[in-house]
Length: 137
Image 1 (cartoon, rainbow, N blue to C red):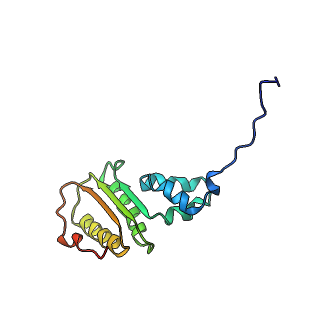
Image 2: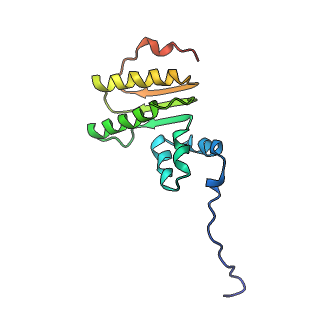
Image 3: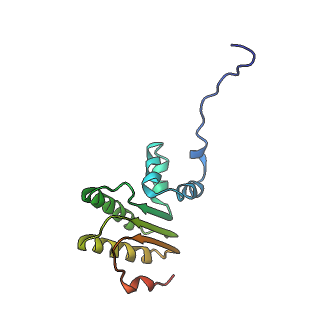
């Protein structure tokens, strides 16, 4: 080994050592699907993803109806959580039918029940219920 070369040290995972609140804050900037891919890094990340207070759903990878249904079921999983929710962001470019509309209405009610602080929706061709504007928060 020459004098200019330094021995390499073993990689240290410093991110996983951060507190859950900090990890949640970092993950809150990602769409939920990308945030959940972090669970493959370590078992430590799995509960962090389920405690996110900022949920960003984006169907940019949805190309067909079957994929859209899986996307909807993924959102349904999160709406079963009872923790407080600060932000709910939903971008959907796919067309809704009556079945999807019922799911969407349930997502709105779940977000309101979780005392949401920020609500962002981008939808194509959907008429909103007027009760979306009635909330205790």
